[in-house]
Amino acid sequence: MITETFDNKSPAKINPWVNENAPELDVCILTFSKVVLENVLATYDCEKIGEMTDVAGTRDIYKIDYKGKKIGLFQTFVGAPSCAGSIECSYSQIKTKKYILFGGAGCLNKEIAHGRIMIPNEAYRDEGTSYHYAEPSDYIEVKNHDIVAEFMRKYELPYVEGRTWTTDAFFRETETNFEKRKSEGCISVEMECAAVQAVCTFRGLDLYVFFTGGDLLDCPVWDERRKEGEIKGSQDDPHHFDIAIELACFVGDK
Image (cartoon, rainbow, N blue to C red; front, side, top):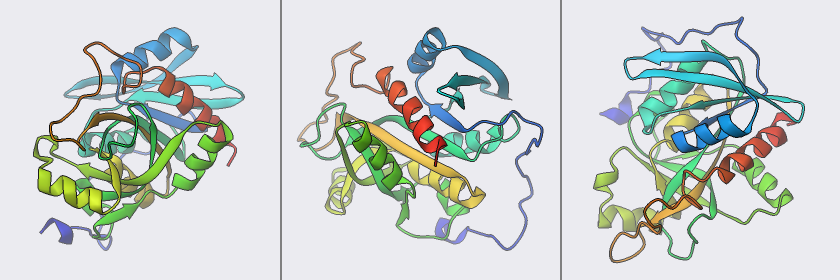
């Protein structure tokens, strides 16, 4: 069974390449959104410092010098294996101990407004990747949630904190599973958090996560909660990167 696959007693057959001569960064930010990335490249002074290439194409890695910090940025893919794997592959191009992950997430509570910041404190492991990096359990702690919440309070950014449901199959978010997760305190659903946290814990890295409330599941019929082409409050909202880069400066001093 997948819950029996964690093995920290024998070596892996394939290991990520750690480039000891790679550029050193204070923090690296991951975004899922091409729209956000394009906006950042047009707004900030970005220097390309590396690239990751695979069969799906090439993802450039950028450095932004901001408020005395060297901050990395690259676009990652959606889904637990791809997103977690992109962190593993990034060791060949950059050297850092801190990663920030942000993006949109489905909302499991109708009382949470569209676009509201949601900070996960635990992630339900309804995916496969995390079971190769951590002992089996229903939930994994999102370790630095208290630091992310501290940052939000400092900058007076409204947020809500709770559990998240990480799933590999968004077309199988059934009514029964939704009710189970909501009853356990999950306020969001997404596809990466549990896996990325497991990888970061296994590798001795610090992860900082926040989501913004997108579509709503807590209603009789799924509600996308935005009009076609609307960006404000969505995962393509460039304002969310502004939050992420300030968070990078905040955790860079920790």
